[in-house]
Image (tube, rainbow, N blue to C red; front, side, top):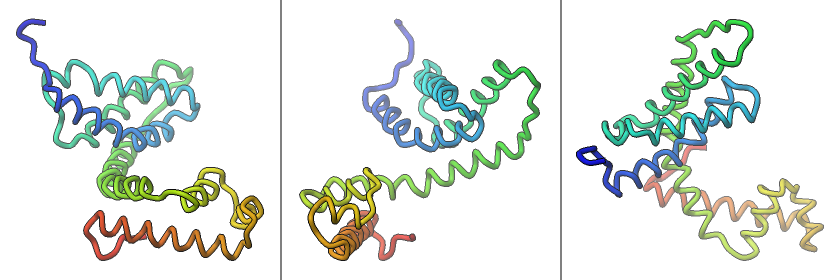
Length: 182
């Protein structure tokens, strides 16, 4: 529309990047308040729509994005309960505020670490990548992996240990730290 403020492409990309980074924490926060998976997904979609709303275009991306998004999630979940609950639910707003603050803190602390892990995981290839996938995606034990690849479980355990240590070193280097807390 003529005269309407719009975000520049770089701002839209920043908004999208921030939403993608915040979404797992927001989804977890919503799942605490909305137990049914499908209903929680509906609330998450409402939050996404609010985040990408025209209001953001007019006001800009908030500096404390994670806190802002968790606040939206809190309100959308409460609204959902009000719309769908037969019984009146009484929320302890102080407790919800504390939960929201805790999620914001977790997001702030683990965001860079998660990005570093994802970067380092992209560098793992070949047999090492296959071992990680079998262990963590397929949830196979070292003994089960050994049977599948025709090896001894001790050799698989050693290989997984070495891969984890290499990932730890990569994360430390990426974050520019001497140690990455456990």
